[in-house]
Image (cartoon, rainbow, N blue to C red; front, side, top):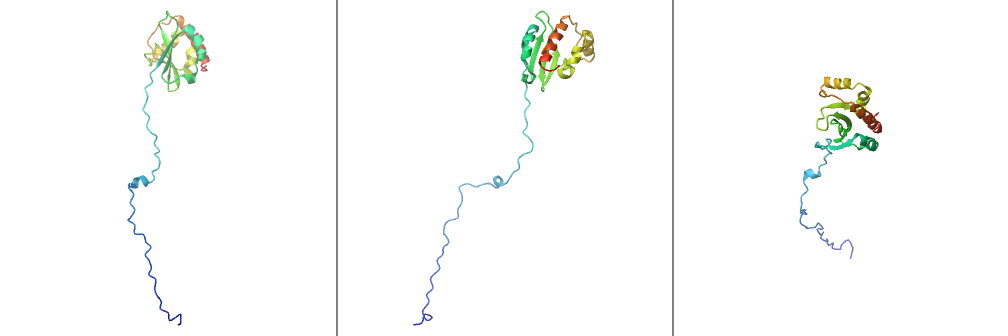
Length: 171
């Protein structure tokens, strides 16, 4: 019998595709989560903090003891240092810090509008005159202070404050 005459039998092709149900996850990923979003270029808004001032009253004799310990960088915004010339002298002078700048204020801690000036720029001018009345009159004319009768103890304040300024590295 010839091989060519042999009866050919066809082998049935099996279906190898999996008859499994379509896979569906238990959760759905939203399209928005898959989209790339560039980071926002606008920084988050910061709420302005109200800084409560800290008042540190010291007498003139204490200035010599304490001033060498003071450093400009250690004074936070809103910090207030009150200088009282003597126990008997009612006038007070105040240093206060605002926006990393140090100001000197006359008349106690309650009225920051009475501002003599930024120490860095106005300190030497403030101390340059021996005539207290001329400095006072200038500030009165500018509407920064009211007319005040200064006593001789103002000179003591200037001397002590000059020392404080030197120790703060301002002059």
